[in-house]
Image (cartoon, rainbow, N blue to C red; front, top):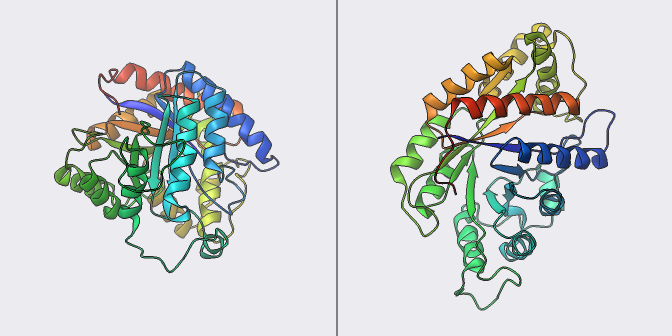
Length: 336
C-alpha cells in the first residue's frame, strides 16, 4: 500500500543550463505520469549552481501545464523566506489553473546560506520558532471563512493540501500537532528518521485535512540494467554531496568510474551517512532495498529522487523504480 512519487530538484548538470533542466524536468514528469507515479514535487533552493528550482511556484506551473493527471507540488517551499500571504496567492493561482492537482509542502529551513537568506530580504531577526504560526496563517488564507481581515485572491476557499517537511524531530512535532502529513528528508539527512517517524505517529492529532498519520520518506534510487552502470551513474550525486559539504557546490558532475572506491576515509564516511537511504543497482537490487526500507519504516509513500547526469539514464532509473514499486506494493485506496 505504499505509493511512489518523484522528488526533483531540476538539477543543472555540468555542461548544461537551467533551460535544459526545466525541459528535462517536464520530460521526467510526463514519463512519471505515464508510469503511474502519484505526485511530482519540486524543492526550493537558492544560490546553488546545481539546482534550478529556486522559483518553485513558477516551475510547478510549468510542469503542471505540461502534464494532465499527476499531482504536482512543492517539496517544499521554505516558508521563512516568504510572506504566508504571497505563498497563499501563488498556490491559490496554481490551484485555480490546475484544480485538484496542487500540493504545498512547507519547510522551516531557508534552503540557502546566510548571505543568500539575507538577499531574499526576509527579516533574519524574526522568531526562529515562528514556523508553526506561519503555517497556521497560511492555512487560514485557504479557509472558506478566514479569521484574518486580509484575503488571498486567489486562495480563499481553495483546497490546497499542506504538508510539513523536515529532517529533525522539530518538523515531526509540528506536523503531529497540526494534523498534517509529514515528509522526512531521509534522502540526504537520515540520522533522525526513525525517531522522527515514531514521534510523529505517537503525537499525531487528527485534523480536518487528515484523520491518521501519513508519512512520506525521501529515498535515492540509482537503477540501471547492470550493477556497474548503476554504480557509475551514482557517482555524480556522490561527487555533488562531497562538493556541497566541502563548501564548493557545483553543477551535477559527470559520472566517474571508480569514484567511491577512490574516495578517502572521511569522504566515504560522509557518503555512507548521508546516502544510507539509497538503492544502487539492478532491478533486483533496487527491489530488495525498497522492500527492506518499506518494512523498516512502514512508509505510506516514498519520494524517489534520482540525480543522474544523463537524462536517458535518469529516465531509465525512474522506470525501473516504477516497475519495482508497481510489482511489490499494492495501490493505496486512500491518498492525501
